[in-house]
Image 1 (cartoon, rainbow, N blue to C red):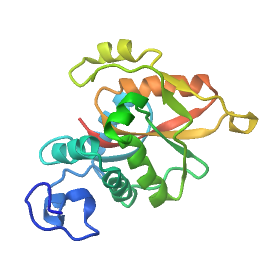
Image 2 (cartoon, one colour; image 1 turned 45 degrees about the vertical axis):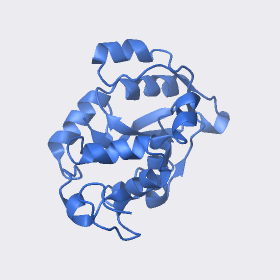
Image 3 (cartoon, helix red, strand yellow; image 1 turned 90 degrees about the vertical axis):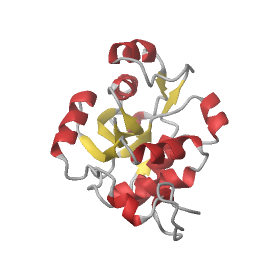
Image 4 (spheres, rainbow, N blue to C red; image 1 turned 60 degrees about the vertical axis):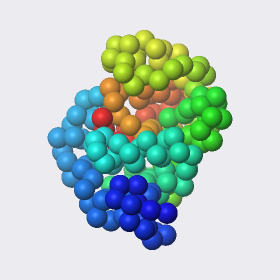
Length: 207
């Protein structure tokens, strides 16, 4: 293929549809303390990874990853992040924020799960896509306020109970975009109620 941004021909190992010069334009957040502070304020827990700010040209990267049906691009972006951030603590499990089965069926995959798979490979960590599931489907919350998101997400996620050895299991949540933090907090609430210990989160983009 060609670069999503400039149209130049890509080499097989180039990151998720973007050529190196265009990637260099990404506002990478690996060393951006202000963005990490903002992400922590929104989520309420430590940040284990942030990819970039959600603006041109990174908006097109996230849009194509989510809606063009290419899970391999999400995995490549996860590995890209894994090379820029220190791995999560040993014995932690990476848990992707789930999509409802209807959305997975329509898209063909869960973008957060694809991103999580790339991170797990880069960091040599386990991941579990069955620990948490979305039990209700609703329209997009892109334009919703934080309060509206919190109300809409109440009871949206369900954690699968583990066995005795998983009680207290430390997990890190992985999602594609951090907006208000409402989705993260809803997932954390469900996991905590089931006996898991959520250490923090990883996001590809910070809106």
